Image 1 (cartoon, helix red, strand yellow):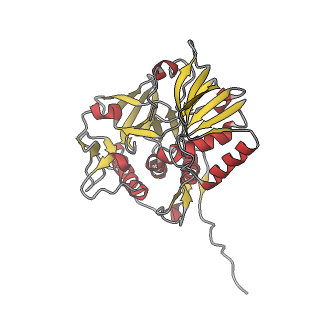
Image 2 (cartoon, one colour):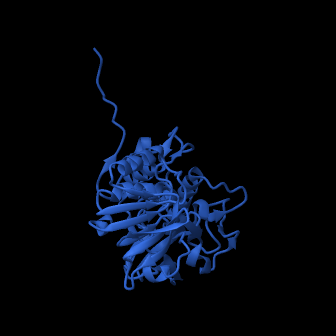
Image 3 (cartoon, helix red, strand yellow):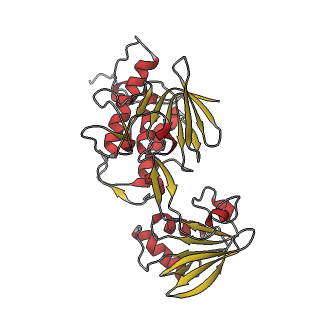
Length: 352
């Protein structure tokens, strides 16, 4: 049983920043996310695209923002349950909660913060015959690259035209025996440097590029041995060990919708006048997953909501105990790992 003060469901930017705000209050956090790495949409969909409305950053790449948030919360030592979905919840007599994932991992927390963005993300799957068979038991269809070493020395076919398809094609070109990138158009929607790098790798023979084309079928009785690709009305066969379609993610509220929370327009209603608590005492919703009058689905709004949520959880866990807000420029930041960040102290010295 994993025990924590605040169980955060969703490792996007709002969930990650909540760890920092909780840490300032000496509250421990653990995060559950269905994706295999922290960052949510920022990491999975557009890591190399710039964001222009983060305070203090005229421009910051989405992936760099995730990296910075992870560095910011490192000293508060959050726990992570990644690649699993929060499925069931039970409220105990003492007011704590037990949350169990689809893999059976149990978590006990004094408060729950749902920060799942637009919900759990499921891969957009191509409509292909027998794809359900090949996506099970490591038979050759993967929708995420969880461990690149899995593909070392293998023949890989990647389908897609965005940042994820480009970036993984580039990365796996140095791991796999061969990489074939298939896209239905000649044009790619991705970072310019990634497109240029794929062009360079194609020119040197490290990536085989097939456009405009689509994967239309599989070969292999026990697992994938090759895929059929349609190119300008003709068919070709590409031998492969793994087919990785990277067509983005589809957001869904998922099992949380069955937790008894008040739902409106596929979002969770909260009390925005106070602390972003839901209709269930002790369960909060912050970031894009919530809804209230005047709601704006912006990262910076999620940061604000996370801050007020953590203050409310502190009061919930410590009834009657008064917390005196101190600016970090004055108080510094004490991590759970024994580290301390603080401004340099003024030097006391007389001037002759």
